[in-house]
Image (cartoon, rainbow, N blue to C red):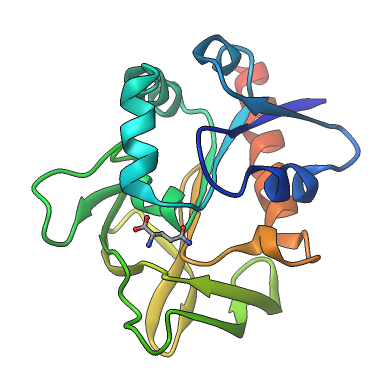
Length: 197
Ligand code: GLN
């Protein structure tokens, strides 16, 4: 059994909870810092990254979230969640949690395509993942330890760095739970490795 939380300060929380429901997974809606303690993995949902950061600071989540990542626990960020995980943000001096070695540009898809859907190949998951992009960020550059999982028209939209996953789109807004299942597998693998050392 693994316990996976969804950070519930703002954004699409319920949709992630539904996408994570699977045998062997207990899903927790995280509203208090103490709830992070016994989690094996955490989802940072989409929403609005500036607002989310403000709430993270207001409720004292910043250091505990950094410690969670530092402890090697898996995290999965979608859209605004991806922005929170980036080491660098275009036009900003500092990133937020800085857990994935990537440079991200917010709202990078421009006005006329603020929201759209596309079918994508996602490495290790499937070649027909329906991706919903909503004022989505783009990954402009990644460090050498970062694996590119998916591109849309040549631009990077999903990555993995060890136990950290992030995508610019919203897999939680479709009925297809394969991306979440992939994260669940990362969480299970990470937990079993920790138990074996
Ligand atoms: N554009 C939003 C931001 O900068 C992210 C949008 C989303 O999560 N759908 O936070």
